[in-house]
Image (cartoon, rainbow, N blue to C red):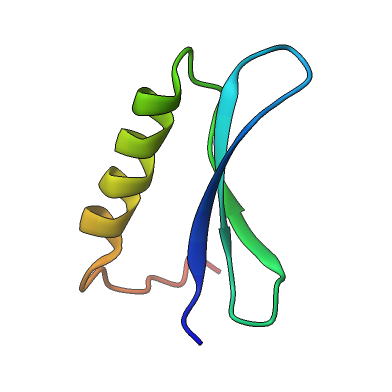
Length: 59
């Protein structure tokens, strides 16, 4: 099973997304968004930006 994005409402009534690996571990999470639609767009932005993104070591 591939990883998945989840969109949820936080305690403050804002919407957030998290990216979960296939083992259920959270590997990334997004900022607070005012609407569920905006959180979904955040997921889409991460999907686009991560596709083919290089790994850079800064150490």
